[in-house]
Image (cartoon, rainbow, N blue to C red; front, top):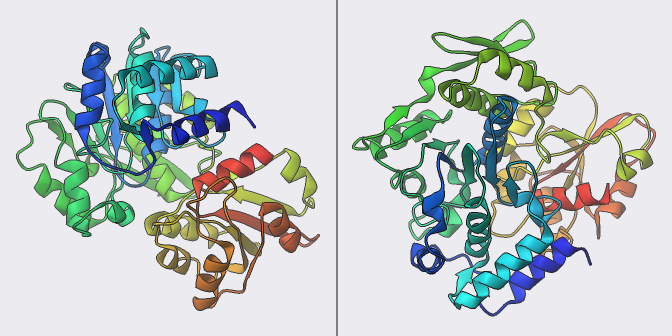
Length: 420
């Protein structure tokens, strides 16, 4: 068993930590008080919240800051291949030993926490000791009572695309309530950056921010434009070519533009941003495997792409990209429970020649391959199930030219990356 899985099991099986999601700031605030308020030592906190695009926007901002010879800590969720990925400390990830030491310190306080709260405290304990320029913090499912909403005076709060992805966590299962829980509790004296939204969602965001005293940057302050086959970021003062070799969809390009707007406001030079863009890639998001064990077993005529998107909005973004790929396309589909598999898979009508459904290894809370196969067939897809990823590859792979897409779950993408 890897140390990463072992640490997850230590958290999941500890009587003090609860796997059930329970939004309440009282527990984490009590822990932080007992620890002497390490969260108050943070300078220049930037929160990232919303439904789709938190990680890609955060990672882009992080890349621009570091290219500007400045330092950041970063907290992300979930990790893909290893628990350490959640905790970036300026120039390295936390070590397993540091994570274990932090867990031991937290358990001594004898305050019951959810696992996500415990992970947030691990980040805060260690990031508070770092002398970095910025702290980038990705929220969990919502924000009102999310454990990352504990910083009194953040430098900025970034709202990415909001959709119905987290309805299952709410008593009032409406888009209005999702927007309220994510946007209605932002700081009053900060900079707020709103990413691209559907018009009805933007209207709801503006309604929630009507009385907010912060400086609010709405998405009409910049554009993603296309000239010939080239994409550009454009605002009233800047036009920046998006020479992004590994960013493949309109949705991801919009997240990159959102990050550029933030970076420019952080006084990062336009030339630094232009130099950095070609090196930006997002692991597990529109990621083509170019080498590794899995790629090497495929025929030269086959490509494989991983995308952990699992919401209807993300599926639409991926489907729009795939419609422009002029080779036969196949899918390996896995998904966690409490998602909306029917709405998700409907977006790919007419795209995939065949879908192979699989369970997610090491995840008790995933949908079975049989359940997903039934949903795919109900939506008129040619579908079969497989017991695992390796079996799914065997059912698809052949010398014929094709693109194999692994879709529906970041957890499954993480497993595939580890296998590769």
